[in-house]
Image (cartoon, rainbow, N blue to C red; front, side):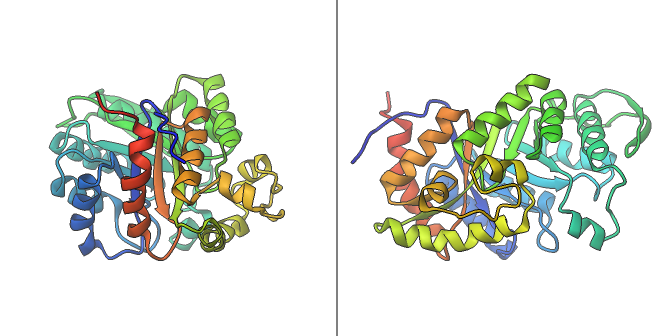
Length: 320
């Protein structure tokens, strides 16, 4: 069945996985652009490749693709050097950089001695100061985490790139609403969770962008696709780090509730092309503005190619 339903301004991306060899990135970025994707994202996870270097490589290898840096842990870089690097990327490729900031996974931050005394303050202060610096302002700020005096970038970009926050709790989403352009949501997000996240942001401010990571696995046999993706999703659920999202999905705050096929399908782009089209349309109807496909099986590129060939044309509707 083909519904040919247009999802309007929804954009589509793919993620280059943290543990993929960086030398494969330029070719993959060109491939994604040629296959009609709008965005390419990274997750800067310890101890894999660095996000800034990877973003630069992807921008140089392509001409149209927007490149998302996310999530950059705000406690691993000084806000001044972070602003300098992002300003450089934005000047080299205007309008093609999206920045995603996060607390950093607590375990990893402790491992490198970078665990902040106040993660929420670190995230909010970094976001505010970073955006002001990228806007070309002179900034003085003495907070719990960020401490700068009379700082101004020597070469700010013509316009501040989009800055998003990766968060899933009420407090973090309120911060996103107050201080950023929107949110990046993880791979266990259902349409109901998208609605809740956007409503929580809206109550605090005007942030609009809602980027959603979704595990993709396209197969003619729906059950095969779901079974393969279940293993990967279960690993995330077992971490117990997204309590509000798993509660909304009916899995409890610890994420250990019974994961039915229906619930799994609601938080993934897994199944037949028809199944995946329905899932993406549901996220779009809930308010998602960009769906970024994440490897949900061992042959990620095959699923990405199938999505581009069989699902994207339906979602974008007729041309002209």
